[in-house]
Amino acid sequence: MMAFEAVIFDCDGVLVDSEPIANRVFAEALTDIGLPTTYEQAVDDFMGLSMTACLQKVAQRLGTAMPQDFLADLTERTYKAFKNELQPVAGIVDALEEISLPMCVASSGEVSKMRFTLGLTGLLPRFDGRLFSATQVARGKPHPDIFLHAAKGIGASPERCVVVEDSVPGVRGGVSASMAVLGFAGGLTPAAELTKAGATVFFDMAELPGLLQSGF
Image: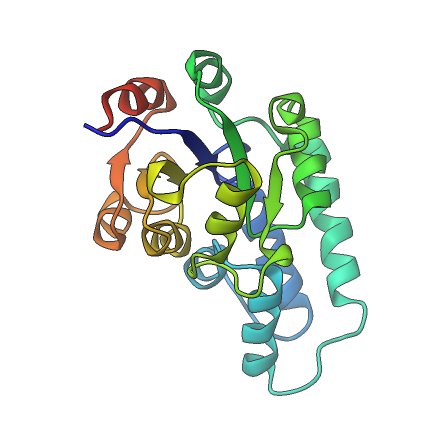
């Protein structure tokens, strides 16, 4: 049974229920620029990746230069939807109250996005000053860089950290960083895919404090 030093949370889909919103808006925006994309395709192809990686995929599929205002338009549309719809992930507020370990966030999104979504949902005070972004490292998920950067930032040993993730790239990144990984299967990624990537799967945030205390 491992005694953990710290918990590293993904943001989207783990702390804030943003994945359904963001993927819906992304699919609509891609369709508008001539790349017909369903919500399900957006989830399968882009969830868990950095925006840079997503846009690289999009450019390859388009086979031509993307509209210069695409990212600005996408951001505006996504933030507008967040303002109207975003909520904390069910059960996460109570779960965080029960966790005594140091906590931080390691996300594929920019720090400004984390501050926006966590601020909207009232979670920012719990993590302010401990937000780490894939934009701060050389490689995003599924590489380990962001998780190692986060562990260093909070002074924790990587092998004593536990990652809480909801996407396959995120799980793979945590495993590559030699961290224990809990895969939250209460969102969009099937439990079997999270397990195959190397996570110990759970379905309800009410389970999280007990899992951390038990060391799995």
